[in-house]
Image 1 (tube, rainbow, N blue to C red):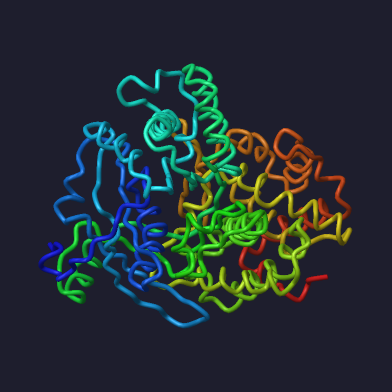
Image 2: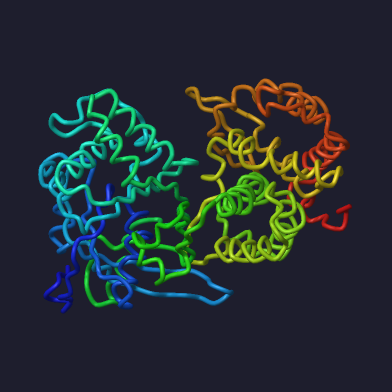
Amino acid sequence: MFNRTTKNITSKYPEKVLQFGTGVLLRGLIDYFIDKANKNGIYNGSVVMVKTTGPDVSEFTNQDNLYTISVRGLENGQAIEEDIIVDCISRTLSTKTNWEEILKTAENPEIQLVVSNTTEAGLQYVEENVLVGCPESFPGKLTAWLHNRFMTNQAETLVVPTELIVNNGVILKEIVYKHVIANNLGNEFSSWLNQKVKFCSSLVDRIVPGKPNQEEADKLFEKIGYNDNLIIKAEVYRLWAIEGENIEDFLEFAEADNGVKIAKNIDKYRELKLRLLNAPHTLLCGMAYLSGFRLVKDALNDEMMEKYITILMLTELGPAIPLNLDQKTTHRYGREVMDRFRNPYLEHQWLSITLQYTLKMKSRAIPLLLNYYNTFDSVPQYFARCFAAYLLFMKVTKEENGKFYGESEGESYLINCDFAPYFKGVWEHDSAHEVVSNVLKNKDLWEYDLTTLKGFESNVENHLSNMMICGVKDVASALNVYA
């Protein structure tokens, strides 16, 4: 265990940020940026960290709010290993036991930035009296905090949620205003909110797996020379894209790292992440798993699969992104994604990516398929093979206790998808033609009849038939059939 004395870390910074959430993503990304800026003399501020679940903050206070980020991964093909002691948390408070103290931070005009990550479920409206005790919901807590600020100093404030919801800033603002009306907080408060408080949507992207397993932790502790109960792992790649204008004064720490992007519109960053990170994951998870790969990095170490993934991303998915991004941008991001996929330090399971496979296919991949046809009016062959592998992965071979399973090389796997019962029925006749026809024309799945896409049905059927006969990996390896 270490503390500020034993590690000879004595620097303290004035409190400038209120952070709702103590999770690994905030600590491994947002606090990482602030800490880096402090150490480089660009920023001079600390974070009041608020725990919104449970009263116990002793794990943080026992270490004087210090913790280590173990950064591991690849950047431009080069291995990166860094162990960073984060020293930007001034104190950790719990909404369960320190609510009045949290409210009091609103009286400090130097705290001008509020960030949050309370999970997607946190951005919900709950009918409640926000001025009596600690509100139940995060938007309720924020409304109470902002009201106390209005009543005391009325300093300008920037609110930047990082929950993984599109337009999270807009949604949070709408909920806060709903609380203002429901709680009769007055026109003056509403006017101040409108003039002095900015809500900015943002997008965060960094894989932060959390605490390493015991064996890995022991090796790390031996390397760094101390034990740390709060140590977390993080990949090298980092992104915090913030949507807004004239907000740079609230975000001075952004200068310390090019992973912080401030832009009038962040659709580009969202589309790149969704279409060149999330969509390839979704398209490839069934194919990779049925080809015998269990970890993402293992597939990238296979020459054939690496080539397949590269062609899929750069020649089919990249050009189909609806924002008409230039090739240089998509290729640069694609190379970054490949480095992330092959990160030797992360144990990323392909099977875990198949969670809600069908919904992910619908939201992440199908829009690219439709736009590819709008642009090229031809079959994206690599996409078609991935879709065929998806259909084969969804073949239910047994049902036990309400759960559905498929089989690959004699090994059962869980089909963790709400549409597994549907696919059990679709596969009853075990006919590639019937499966492809029924699934592609199902508008309840895709909100579109995919059989109307010229040549797509016949190509998927052909690939699926071959996969059922020869195996998925053999079909994937037939790269020369691309047309």
